[in-house]
Length: 132
Image 1 (tube, rainbow, N blue to C red):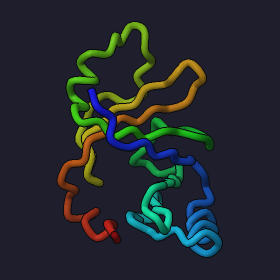
Image 2: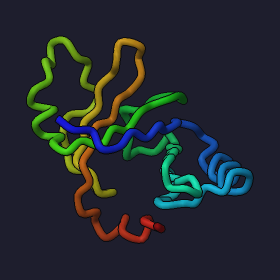
Image 3: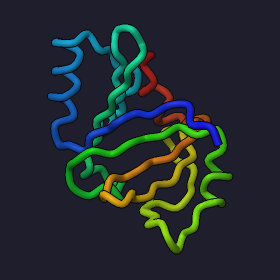
């Protein structure tokens, strides 16, 4: 299993404020923005941050505010199949999402959500959200 990216994302009701803060003060650029979820990239391209409104009905398993991690995996299906689901709390079963990823989510021992994903083709509704 190879992980190709780790993106911390914050569940917050201040998505727009967070986007403005990082773009204005630190030069981050928007690379994905569908309103309720935004991904930002640092000027050198080495760091990505994301912010998500947990009230969005598309993500009901993310209740409340706080830190989560999105981990891009080369074989998300294999990783999901290999999990001992009796020993790991799965908060989202493996599925294809309309915004363009195949994913599942689990909780780590600290209660931090780990969102494992692999990019897939988004549905038309989300294609315009890809800015960069």
